[in-house]
Image (tube, rainbow, N blue to C red):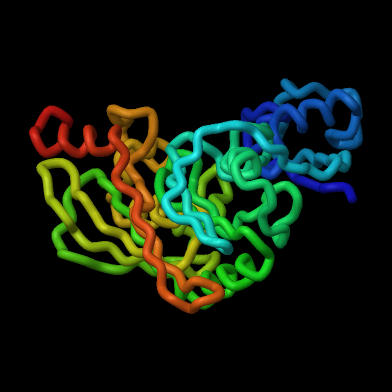
Length: 303
């Protein structure tokens, strides 16, 4: 099925415009479609990726179906925090993608899980076995994985019913006067910068974030955050919306930090074990690079 687009920006290359409007496809794939004449500009097929598009021009994209992805085992380090016959909880490091996607087909959490455990639930398909929820690539911390389909459905139901408690630790820029608060602004994809999410349109999916101050510093605030929903970039976009970007999160306006990541860590998760019904709580310690970052803020060496 073809995709019809109307240019609404100025000064952009064709491939850059397409990447902004079609974020589910990698730029390399879009460029290959342009070379293969699967993209037309005002009906013309002889176009280049570098062509500068103009407002009002019409673009037609004829996507080429890709063969379904199937995740393969790969020997990678994996820190297991909790394990039973139904559930695995790992401590995902920053920089590791949860499952394959555009431009990323190896080195993921899924690849490591398949090598270590073999069979996982298949509810989410062959490309993301076991995956019930995700955390951002540059976010570290606890991630739950289902070992069988029954456990997967149970966890998915608990997430949908907001029974699972997810606690994060984050350092944000600036001061916050109140001791705690909540943010419930709807979240949607940014219409201009498609790799970002936003609260500015007043539209989108209902979202709920609770925060509580742990420590105050001259230029930063250390927070405990609990989320009631699991939207893309939820904590990052909600905190930036109140003027307190997650430290180091340049996508949402923060200054670069001392580490090659932003300061957000999934510290604790509580869920109901699918078979026994017993509540299980799993915690992941703050990783060394974030402990060092926080110590630097405390002693004044990081400002």
